[in-house]
Image 1: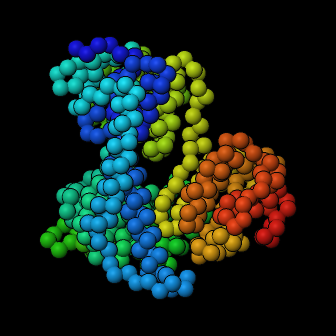
Image 2: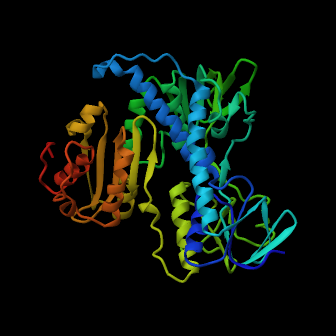
Length: 457
């Protein structure tokens, strides 16, 4: 049996390693259990490699569309293996840095699959480890849907899609959420024929309806097919491809089917049931301090109900370390967590959608949409989109929604505006550098404050 430590963390993804680093920084003895590699899904098969693919897709589009900028370039093709090698290089460097950071903080890493085997006890390969506090941070895995058998060749998940050694000629993407839209965008930029199938009425269902409509318009313009409000009844793979049958009987045919219907919590087989950890549809139930129903047992990241985002898990990991240390950190405002879909165009948001704001505040809600056509930098980039503000009438801005190339980089200021509970009059005097896309945020607040300059108010 290992020595009792202050904190034992099960899972070294964004939530787990952030908790480990902060706890060590606060002077605690920390043990980190990980069955694969530190960094978890985000670093190895999620955020980082997918964004590398999306950047490669941006380069492909830039080459293909160069003449409209007065540059003569040609796109000879996509070296899929080269793209994977580039993404692997990014992941490898980040993994090496993270490993060094964990080692440098004196954190003990126990390799292997851990199970909760008692109150604040985790067993790894026959060795039991105990701690004053156990933090569950085991993450998520791709979901499938009944009747669709993932074979890793014709019917694949996002994890398989990251390793493809050639660009598919055609692909059906099952799921119009973040993962589905990002891969649809990548493959289209790489030259594939792509159709997105979504059971709900629109792409990116959790986003503001205006953002969903703008993305659908942009996708349509790019030649990406869409079937929204279209549940799938079956998918059958053969040697040449996949046939997908929609409810209603329509058949779609492609080389590949990407199943991107979200991610489920990785909680099965970890002893949680046996130890009495409260679960809801596989998710670990926690209070606003991220405590489970068992004393001294906490949970962070994708296994807790809510947004499955690496930066949410990261923030939760830090929060739990500080809570254990008695620092009483402020509870995390879930609506204040920024959300970005890195498609072309990008969709970014923080705070409440217009619908959610009206549900909460009734008719006392005002919105304003500023078109990027009035923004010089966006004209230079030849991107279309908008900044949409949702405010409580005569009160703070409670939602910010952006669509356009590179707008994900603007979400930091948007998050500050939301977190500050700023009124448009608070933001209007801020001077934004020219020409930048950030001016669009400034102009939108000027207009909402009653002094529009580059739009008609």
